[in-house]
Length: 270
Image 1 (cartoon, one colour):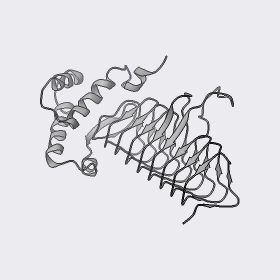
Image 2 (cartoon, rainbow, N blue to C red):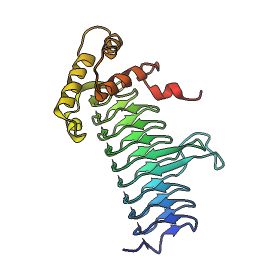
Image 3 (tube, rainbow, N blue to C red):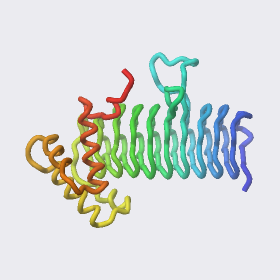
Image 4 (tube, rainbow, N blue to C red):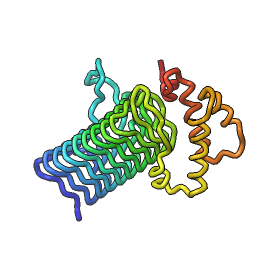
């Protein structure tokens, strides 16, 4: 199948459009954008300047990808960085994704993610792979969402939050601090760690022994006695942790470096 562009759509002459791409009615593809092979843009999709989209993505009606961030004081001549999207993503209706506000950096979305209706992903976020973000969830700028995370509907996320791999946020959670890998959280300001995300462990393809280690670590970290960070530090000093348990420990210790529990905020340029 050759590339198809509906006659009502506008594709800038400097845009690069791959093979077997479908651009539906009333779309706009701005200057310098790159659309990879096999990608489909449904009706009314807007792809901003210099956005790079990989192969075999499906963008549903009225997505707006790569328009300027929502910031007070933003001007048409303000510097703006990039936005790159990998391969095999499904981006549903009315999703908005903003580029970086730093000229030399970019917002990044990885591969094989499902981003559902009305989700907003703010500037300078990084999304890894195999993530699910459900309807109307709102991700503020500078967040990182690691591989396999699942955010249920209407989750609201503060700037600079990190979600560890294969964790799950229940619907209507308000997340204002880092979330360790493999756990389920719910509630808001702050959310509460409830249990291990057993479905996430299975989706990750972890072996029974790996899952056993994660569950044992969870009990030590979240169900033990005494001050929380004291027992995490004691646990961290022990030998023999596998990579998954070490990821849980490191996530907690990193987030503790910032007074509000957001490690990435400790790296910001004040």
